[in-house]
Image (cartoon, rainbow, N blue to C red; front, side):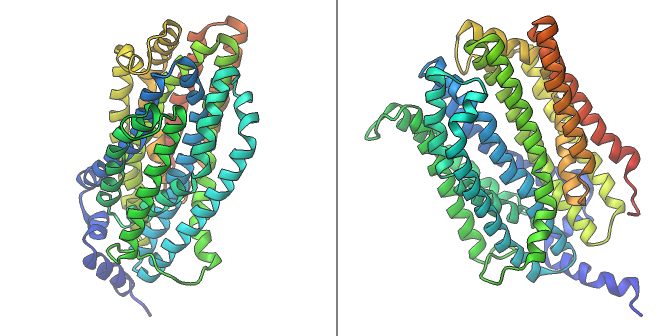
Length: 462
């Protein structure tokens, strides 16, 4: 008969051989989450800033190109969130559970499966968006010069977006081992490269051709390609605890990733469907300047997403490894501490935006209509960003725990309140304030529902 001490021996040996794993399994929770979060937070801010950098330069081309980027933004962020957040969370959770259980060969095999799965999804999504782009952006309210700009940018970025999927797969494999520094350094380095590269291609600086908004798309593809190449080298070199190497593809291992990542992909779809639908309503009801203002204001919400991701991604690895090592009593503590950290940081961002909205909006333009709409959005919705950050971080903890029912239901509730309530607000009052109030209420409900599950419904013995 195997004793508990004997059954836990492989886990103890695994942790002792891997200092990062040992910290996730035994270290004090708050310092460990903070130590793992900061490089990941820097990485996600850098990755998100690439879009902000491009938006700032494109805004110098005029209101129509800026509105065109606002049309593409929900779709691009959907793919980035699916690749890095949903499928990335599934990848990190599977790798961390394998390492926490002492199954190192399985963790390495999962690295190969992660790249194959994400590459396949990248090819499919690229083909779909190249074919459906014109119809999609018209449905979102695009027309005239704004639609032309959206299609120019979209066709270039999505033609090579498979590189973004592969880069995120490799970063997620590395994060699953508890190593947040390496992907953080690579992606931050890529963002620094993008700062001179993007305007050079947009405006034709030096020997670069003047490509306009198309240059922003080309620069983004170069960033994805270089990031994927460096992370692939790191995983192939044997430096990573989960090594990328040749081997057979096995359906059970693919399902380890897809059973979490596939279900989790519904969440970013819900979030970006909500933003896409509300963007369409603003454009149809209030015009191009309002569309540009809402797109610029809501882009700050897209900055909050990587902040919450930066704190939430370590929760995937910590929760997954502790469940793999059969330490469920530690899981609830990890989730609640991480959620509280995310709430504090994202709420601070939202309050600053509400108090000083023009400091953000004037980075992207001075059109009076754009500034007025963006200011209204930030003052109404900004004070509630903390609830979104709380829910989003706990969504990642739920990935590590393989419990995604309540996060998905909370996301659906937010969608119904923001879109349905927003539609009623427009048709009953014609007021942007009432429209944005529905979005704020949806955020509050999203965070409160998921937090209540961990506070009152999570059973430590399960």
